View 1 (cartoon, rainbow over the protein chains, first blue to last red):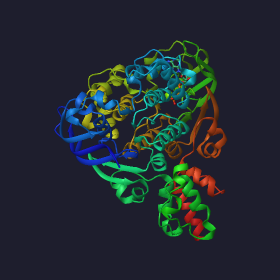
View 2: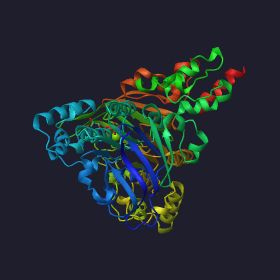
View 3: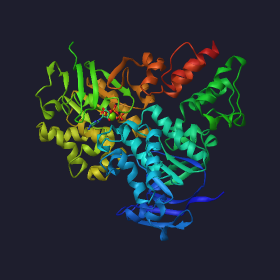
View 4: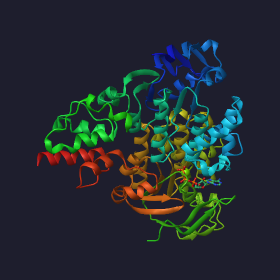
Length: 297
Length: 271
Ligand SMILES: Nc1ncnc2c1ncn2[C@@H]1O[C@H](COP(=O)(O)OP(=O)(O)OP(=O)(O)O)[C@@H](O)[C@H]1O
Ligand SMILES: [Mg+2]
């Protein structure tokens, strides 16, 4: 497996702050992985994302120790420009990134800067507008969209660039539930095509359904990093880090003894399976029996 | 009793011709705790912005405490109806969080001591002591949202409107928000919350208004609404995951929380 983002003994201090926001982390995200980053507010999730594209420290300033290696380039040798050729990120606050007069121009804007040819550009605008449900708003000002529509636009702008690594930092927080699911499923398709995806999201149900790995951050440190299913089996540990289980997993946990579960279901489909054969006494399920189901849900 | 807020045939058309509300009739009663849910762009924000006069009806009427809002200023209406913005960046204009929190009390001529008391109370409630001297615009987005709510609570409006307070909130933040809403309810306030977070809606409000395309699709209690997957689908909503599980495996009830579900199954197994 080829590492695409490597943190090596990396610590980061915001300007004028004495305490590190990220404390000595060493983790690797490999090419083609779909990683969910979870943790309470101020755990360092956004700072980790900012560091993955070099905004911290290159744009914000501040001090750092150790290294972040993106696509083989060391932090000391990179610029935000070199990194964003490969890595794209959307943050929660969509509106403050907009500069153009229409939605269409906004999507095209970043592509112009990358020298993408005109017909190709128009095709991509059409495609991502459709994927993100913005087709009806192409002539509208980005500032005259609802909050959720603005978030969709920010995601569309990123997807149009087709970055190798897609990072969405709480950029589904204002989407309606089905729209949120659509964004997860959209990036999941990119993942299936081989792209690397990193999602920071408080919606643990969607993280459970779509990601293959979970990274748990707590007070600037990486506490857990591994297979999504394995991590979600550990309720007490997650609670220590102020993270809850997906609702269906939690329900199965609460009925573990009654139902004799050895592995907890982590998606709705799995839980429906596990609970509906209850008359046959016990809905025991082994992780292996539904690891295939997951990718198609 | 007359409704605290009432709209009749409320239509709103933005400049440029977008018809965001197409005739909305709702009554919000004293001490209601209401959620407004619905797809992006369905008109939720547009609707509530009429309640404190930030937007004016194109057609129809909005009354607050029985008085037509026509011709009333935002500052006049805000005394009764506090609105925490969906985008907190649009709400702030002070240099520090503390000053931001004191804007309301100053505008409404609270005495020095009263303002100070309010400030301390709200700071404690929302646990924001550590950021009082910071510039609001330098906070992360989630903390900005909390400050935007705090700055409404410091002037104690009778009706508190929060536009997507749960977006980006972690578990701890959700507990704080839940406590705040419970407290407001106990104190006799009316609470209106817009949210896309169905777990939170199901666990914390009893009345839900569902919007789609500028209209109210349904207005009922949580149990009734989350049973209607057809209506929800039209509004781009999925019920909470536990409710979906309950609907799929158990025909005799509707479950709005993990606790409900677990208790029900335990009883069923032991009986
Ligand atoms: N300033 C504006 N000018 C023109 N149209 C607008 C403006 N603000 C919102 N709209 C449009 O009005 C409609 C209703 O928007 P509104 O913000 O009320 O939706 P919402 O239900 O709050 O959505 P969200 O869940 O995304 O916050 C949408 O179609 C939106 O694009
Ligand atoms: Mg809105």
